[in-house]
Amino acid sequence: MIKLSIHKRFNLHLDKADEDDVVLSIKKNSDFVGANLWTLIFAIFIASIGLNVNSTAVIIGAMLISPLMGPIMGIGLGIGTNDFELVKKGLRNLLIATLISIVASTIYFYITPLHDAQSELLARTTPSIWDVFIAFFGGLAGIVAGTRKEKSNVIPGVAIATALMPPLCTAGFGLASGNFYFFIGAIYLYFINSVFICISTFLIVRFLKFKKKHFEDKNYEKKVSRYILITVVIAVVPSIYLAYGIVDKSIFENNAQKFVNEQFQFKNTQVVNKNFKYSTKGNEIDLLLIGYELPKKAIDSITNQLLRYKLKNTKLQIRQGLNAKQEIDFSQIKASILEDVFKKDSVTQNRSISPLDKPIPDIGQELKALYPDMKTYAISNVVIHQLNAPSNDTLTMMIASFNKKTSASEQGRLRQWLKSRLQADSVQVIIK
Image (cartoon, rainbow, N blue to C red; front, side, top):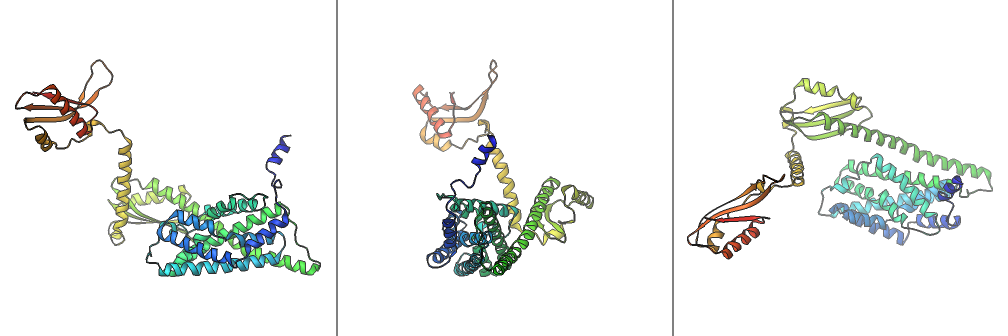
């Protein structure tokens, strides 16, 4: 009973659309002609503007418009159904879409007056393990939604999550600015996303047992199967190798970050810049320090801790003193100082401020204008100790003297004015 209940709840064959309709829909979305092509170009310009002005909302809007998912899912479907023509069509359209996207974004970034690399753009230059997971699970969600009778808002959500368009725009920025590192990193991310979306599409197609295409000529069928296998190997093997590198790099960076945070806690020495360099030949942690120089004994002791953080074959490079002076970027120091200031401010704001710590402004000129007969005054925040109660009260107390006797109503008005002017909860006025 329980087994049947679980099977029914997780059964992907329920609400499955007609197989021919699904195949026809994916084939149609694989084409890049007419409206699809112009939609892609407009979406590229929108995404490029969003990356240029660092607007997340604009980038999300462009990803919703983008039709890039179509040919990738077409390739996955073609591989899963042994349809080599669909695989070729998907690859051809994906290549055309990729080239047009890069050209359009390069043109935009070449003519735009804003040439700074913003945070949204920089985030698309180096793929992480999370990008692989997002592409894979996003692709699974996309193809599952595409095989349903009733279409939902899953496909737009997948388009946002897998983020195929921003890397292409970043590649265009790399070409326009002559930054080859940005171009390679962005294309790398785009390739990883595309391959894992394709793999997830293939898995769901096979799980749902879509009909494979059969040919009367068995020799031709074997040839098609061989071509598809070669295509899969060419695409998947490099992506698995690259994905392994991404995982290894992410683990190294997390361990390196933990190492620096825990081992470089010094009162008079601070890390103002850190750079984690990943390489298959050997990693490096490059640190720039300011403040008191760490002695060699302390550096050797810290270096010996690398193995404890699983940082084997990692070189620790520390620059300080004379070696650091030529490398120091004062903007880094300013950012580091501001970070500490904001941390202290947040701690201070979280604490309740005592009325005793609240400064009292100089109100002498205002009192002179409002009360010409006032001779002297003294004002302070004081604590009233209650001998028979566990807590104490705080109030603002004023002692004043006048040339002539003041009435009770005038004293009341003075008290109310002081409460309003000083924004005090409680005010006491004593007239000598």
